[in-house]
Each structure stands twice: as C-alpha cells, then as structure tokens.
Image (tube, rainbow, N blue to C red; front, side, top):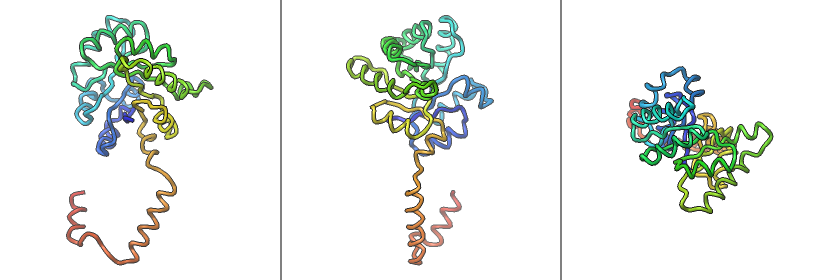
Length: 230
C-alpha cells in the first residue's frame, strides 16, 4: 500500500519525506487555506522534496476554467496529479487531461457508481472519503470494499483506489486488508502507526539491560562525530 501525506504544511511534508515512507502528497483548498501558503509557490516546493504524485486541486467548477487551471498546474512538475471534483464537468476535464498524459486525481467520491465513472474517465486515482461517510453513520470501508471489488472485475480499468479522509491507524489497516492501492494520511495519522505501548516497554527494557553491561558499540570519538553531524 502506498502512503500519501494529506497536508499543505511544507515542514511536515519535508520531515516525513525524509523517512523514506512517503510515496506522494495530496492537497486541497481547505488545507492550503489552513497552511496560509501561496498555492502556486508551495506546490513546486513540494514536488522538489517528494518524487511521487503530488495532487494539486483546481479551484474552479466550470469545464473551461477547470481545463485552463488543470493545464497550468500540470506544467509545474512531471509528478503533478491534477485534482478535480467528481462532477460532470470534472470528469470531462479528467478525460481530456488523462488523454494528454496528465495524472488526474478525482476527488469527493462517495459511491461505487461515482467510482465507476471516474475509472471510465481515465482517472489515475479516485478518492473515496471514508471518514466523512463514517461521520454520517455510514460505513466508509464498505465503499472501499465495493470499489476495489468492482475494479478487480475489470482489469482494463487502471484507476487506483486512494482512500481519503483517513482518521487514524485502523482506517489504514482496514483499507490495506481490502486491497486499496493508496491511503492518504494526515501527518498525525501516519505518526500514530509507529506507536504501540509494548514497543515502548520492550525498548525501555533493552536500553536498561544494555546499560548494565557497560558496553558501547561506538567509541567516544565515533559517538562525538555522530552528534556533530546530527
């Protein structure tokens, strides 16, 4: 399963990209507004630190303006995925951009029927929002199950299921078990995957037992060199 980071916070993106665990980035107008960054300045910077797909969303809703915005965004970097809404105009833009070789992320998917349309429009990614469905009392993971199953029935469809609106580690695990291709996670959700109380407890015991031996793997000079370069 690929991990994308769902944020427009450049420092968070750079920090998490350095772990080698990040495969891409997704942004949206709400995340841009929260960051306070200038969109057209930020996206090229993200593309420099993340080699995988970087989703940059159009702001318009009509076909002609979305097309103009999509074409402009696609020229920023080779790893741009133009993000469009799952509307008739958005899918028309998706078809046109996809035919021209541009990656497209179709967002705001809330039904399997919509996901079929996105795939037929040539979307690189379709983004079902599991957390928002859960908020309405529905089971967001049931939608992921349905989309994955439908896409598997038709090998000619190459659209990847990008699970969005992830709220925590369980969403990630459930999506992975269902065979979703990508999960886009807020930074806090990705960091939460590291955590388990037994890991912390075990590490504390190992550190304490090692200290009792009085040994050191590195010499004092080697340790000083490490601290100097850190």
